[in-house]
Image (cartoon, rainbow, N blue to C red; front, top):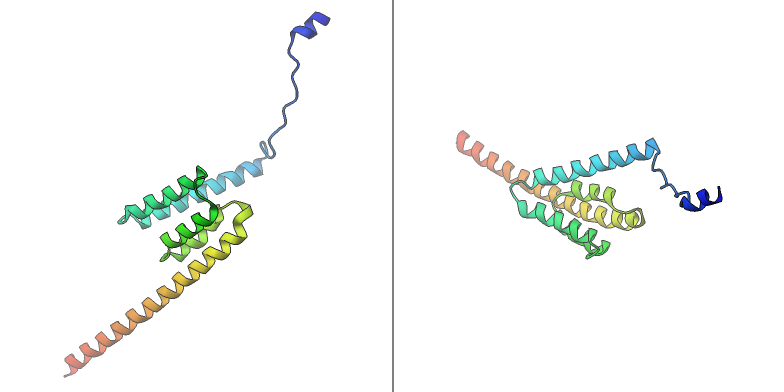
Length: 143
């Protein structure tokens, strides 16, 4: 019997990964993955006429993943890239590591607020132009 126990390798119990079999953890991971896919799809569709923006976003993510960019640089570049898209800026924070959530949220929310204010100013200016055009057209028609 001693020979039998010596011939069989002793196996140490392997530590289980935390949450590896937890259905809620798996479901949460699936939901996050789906959200990420939807976000990237939104970007791809929005920039269908500007594929360089979409490619630049993927490049930012790729170099971050390869640890060639720090999180501050990623935030700065995404803020610049999506400067006219406050919804994309706000949603980007969802995908960042927990350790940088607060910093990222503050920076991207600020960039989104600037973008929203710029869009409101542009919309107001457009409405003013349209109003002036309507007045001019009315004046011509009413003679």
